[in-house]
Image (tube, rainbow, N blue to C red; front, side):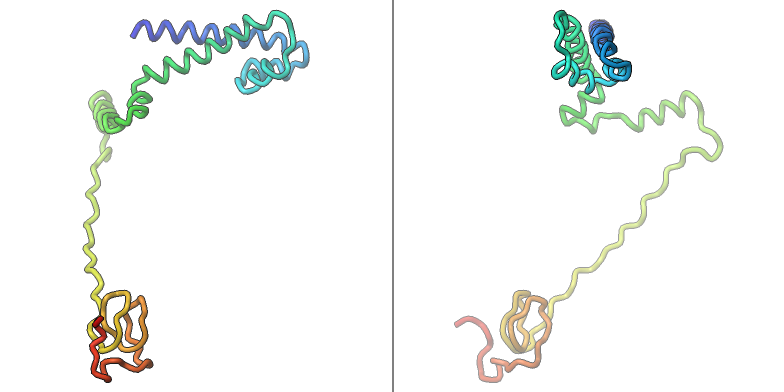
Length: 171
């Protein structure tokens, strides 16, 4: 863990050294650009790769990029919540442990945290299909008088094939 902390400190220091040196170049153009290069990394990136044409910019640019990339990689790999999320083990994040440790450390005040009961589960019965109404088959699988339909309702206006002696079943 000590090596991680040292790496992050070195990365941050090299980042700030590079940003400070690059902001000095930018401040020669304008004060606002110098402040932007120092404080806002996207402006620094734009300035270094598209605007700055000066001899000797290699070392500050290298320090700035090394500091930014090394710090982001070390924090992304070794910061536990980020590494758990990146590896898909989010269930190991102990969110209730944080609340329990806070209660143990600071105590619970009157009327504090109380678990709320879960709401009752309502069971909805499934819909009942239509019955045989002497007609042709529809998409719902029931037999209704009239033309084929998807809803399974009775279309009594059409003539029934059952009146002619057929059941509507395939022959």
